[in-house]
Image (cartoon, rainbow, N blue to C red; front, side, top):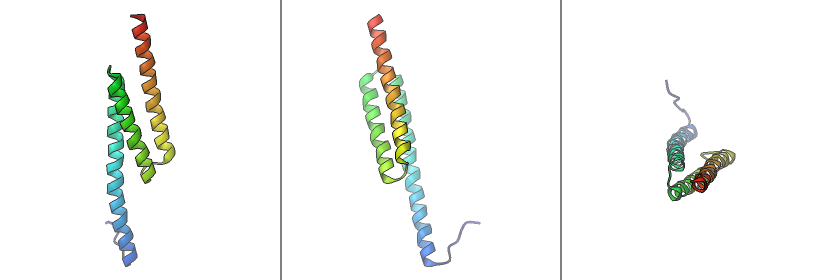
Length: 100
């Protein structure tokens, strides 16, 4: 049985929590989607598309952190991991181009 608030203030807090839950879920879904697309772009061969996807992912992650959906350190960690992956792919691409 779901929680049924008794006092008006508790009813309001419950309404607010439901709104926040929906909003946070949407933001987290967006974060996961943009992160996944950035990883796919980085794995691809187009460096410009990978850079654009990384920028977009950074923007979404930092915005989610500023709104309070994600913790600041979590967003920074995810951005750092994406950046590291991007730079590794660039170095690998340059090494492959020099050898060929």
